[in-house]
Length: 258
Image 1 (cartoon, rainbow, N blue to C red):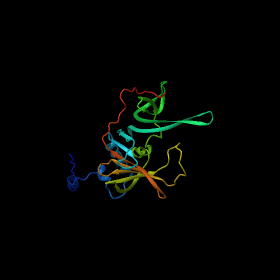
Image 2 (image 1 turned 30 degrees about the vertical axis):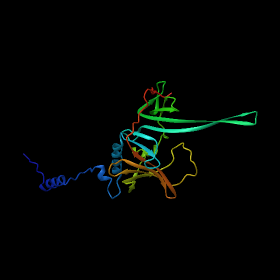
Image 3 (image 1 turned 90 degrees about the vertical axis):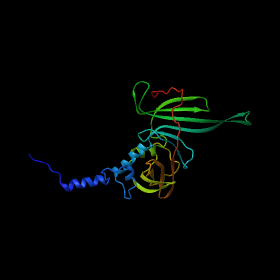
Image 4 (image 1 turned 180 degrees about the vertical axis):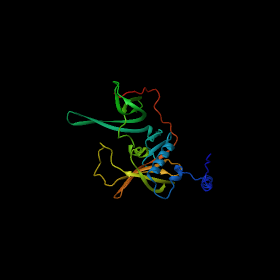
């Protein structure tokens, strides 16, 4: 009978490696703190860990850290489950009498909206399939009661660029390590361009890049921003807080797109 023997040197090396806590697949928190540039698989590992860290969390996404902004409850796939906003608008109407005087009326509305991303494929009310995810929009204007309508998810959703980076829909590369507020964070960067169908407010700035900054300790996203070498940047900050974000009570949500 032939006996298989494990070389003593190899066996001793394995024991030393295990005792020293070395692993072939280090955790994301160890990877994100590396001083070298991260590889593409390591970047994917960090983004996956960030999606796990933010799943189920609630936060406001605002231009100023800690400021007001749309409130978000995250799903497990790196995209919002619910988005809640408060806004308003003012309109004016006028009427002339005898061609000499004008009466102007002003109307102001306060609007609360909750957008639910169901995670389910949309279907049309005639029974045929619709392309995309089913989205329910709840709206309450001037406290007149909630209404609900269904649609499909589009490329123009709130903060779509932020969540496209987090989910890996947009390919990102490793960037710099810096301090965001009082937190140490690592940037993950990609080229940026306006969503298809959007209307630019002026001449397009060339060489725009977007950065998603992830906390090296908690692995939570801290800030997203767009910048260019020749222009000042702008962005939004994640302010994590305990929020009760859900569909309003007593409203029947449509299950098909009209």
